[in-house]
Amino acid sequence: LASSATLNLNWSLCCLRFPLISCPPQANLIILLSTLACGLICWGHHNLYDLAGGAEGVHRIAEIFYRYMFDDPLMTPLFENPNDDHVGRMALWLGEFFGGPSEHTKQRGGFYTVVAVHHPLTISDAQRDRWINYMMAACEEANMPEELINSFTPFIYSGALAAQRNSRRGSF
Image (cartoon, rainbow, N blue to C red; front, side, top):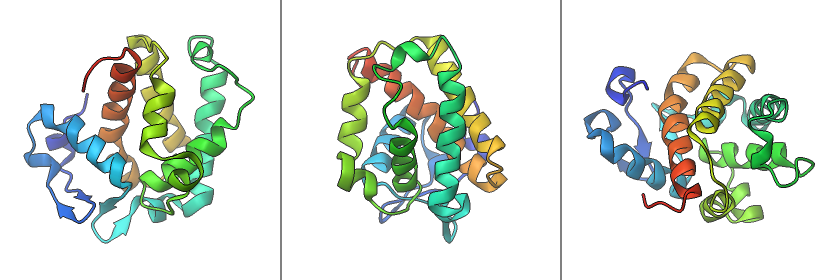
């Protein structure tokens, strides 16, 4: 895993300025959850939603990501109904997570819904790692700016770990 210090990131979380690079590694999950709850990540003077190209950009990431996911027999058991609108839901989530409109919260309930859908699953280490690889590959294939990928990478890793831990009904 790439360390946050290696990536030399400085995040704005909600209204608080909290440099991720000064955090001990065990605090990163707490920071992730705080960020997810407020739904705003900033990079300098730009939010990631704008860097991604807005709604079209985050939808493109979600489409590519789920193309990988549903083509992989290791990953498909995680989905009760593959015909559900996973792309649309992921696009809403990424949009809000990246600092865009709060549509995921309005339409689906936001952070607590994301936690709840992962709770009944049992996500293996291999599935967690594959999820990380597919999200990274989707960002790259969607031609996301390097600045966005570098900013999002620590959250891809810690978000996948949080989903896995929650799926096992573990504690954060």
